[in-house]
Length: 505
Image 1: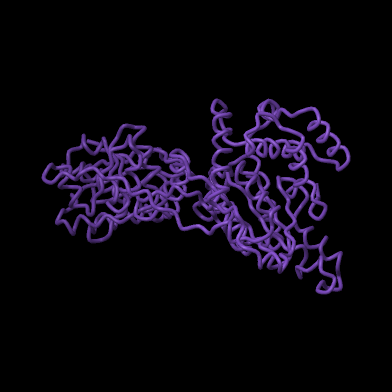
Image 2 (image 1 turned 90 degrees about the vertical axis):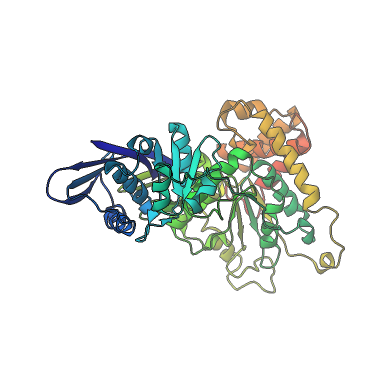
């Protein structure tokens, strides 16, 4: 008789069903594992054998064959230990085979039979819910899996607990979802004195998830402004929190099964590799752009990043997803993020100050910012010059508006956009609108249209730049709760696009 249970193999955030089949037949004693397992899966035989021995369960002196179906799907990771043990326990009549066949299991076994935590419990729970099966996983991973309401999740500390549960001696209770974790205390926008134009641009960028580049000398407040962006962003919706948590689950970033409602804010160092930024490695893991899904990716000292790394951002910025292609895997991860970048105007950073600039000025500025290619620069919706802060500004009282005053305006603008695009698949905010949808929502007065046409003709806007100005103008109008884009909205959007110090498009 062949017994079976189920587990999953991860391809990106997708958990694909794997059927674990076990057959015990007469013949020379053997323990064979087939179905395209990697090294970690092949070693499961020894871990399962030791765990059985610890429970005083002897394997039969027969030919044991375990097949992981479909056989052409690569199987990677140590989470196959528990389903292999479960199918084998059913084959030797220690647990009921019919109960094992209704279970999706994942977990690593230690040599003494403990069930160790593994990555990916949340995507596995979604797979189990779709198949209407029970998920059996390590107890330490069960809290995150229990966030899927439609799934029945059982957490076990040891293989002996699993045997007692399936034999009816000591049933395990369903797992409870982890807590909604409080976000970190964010820094307040009120701390920033001066830089009113940069703060206004930050508000617009946050309201519509527009990509933004700040250029200014050292100490002008670029990093300070960026650190306060999380305090302006609205919390994740339930759907967004589940999507981001699935990616974090694959990377082991969920703390004790808790899910955060605060939006991700990722700030990799400029020495990060391409695999770290876009994803990759031996198992095609998600990169920083996917970990920033529905949040912010902040790249400080943008020209210092590798040119190759920066160019790989161009396609994900447009499509909202990235395909990590390797010889043994083609994995797609979601990555709808807001790109926030900061840069000095030149290598020394003092291009605008004749008393401090180097002897190569002004050519050094063109060389330094020239590391950012024209096509990538064209994808920044807002380009802001951040000048040095005057000492008189530093002596002024704190500004009237801080994060508590600006955040509600951003939340209101996003609610307007959510309602506007409720019937549009794949469109959540103004930055996602394209084609006929953008033409429909970006209706402007005659003066506004004329101004945009004049700017496009005079400054040679690309087609991409033209549409991005429309999106920014639509967001500015939303912040004013205006149904139509007025001339003032269009003028402000154009001013961020055509900054003389930064314009390369």
